[in-house]
Image 1 (cartoon, rainbow, N blue to C red):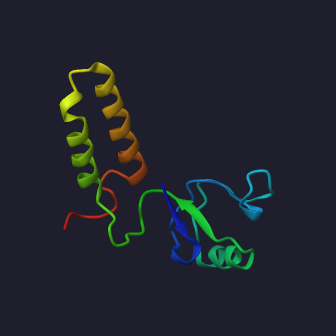
Image 2: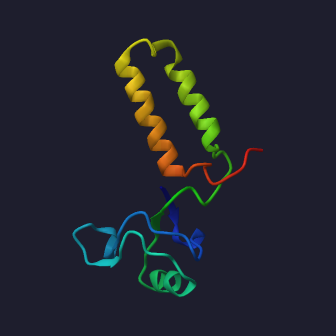
Length: 112
């Protein structure tokens, strides 16, 4: 899942969270999680003043972003000295699963 400014949203991206009026979870819902964005929907959201939204995966790459394999390698390095502790091994698995789920299987980008 990635939070992006609305001006970087594109058709066929999928919402990862509901969008609420005035960015307040107690406000009126505008679009639901799982909605596939279209050009017309993006235009309507701009007219409603929506500034940002959460989309599935990691579709927008900016300078400094790292691909999934780079992030997983760094995670392994951070945990490497403490993997004999079973709780740390469980934590490593949890973080690994979170990153893979949040960014998609290949992180949305091929290695450079």
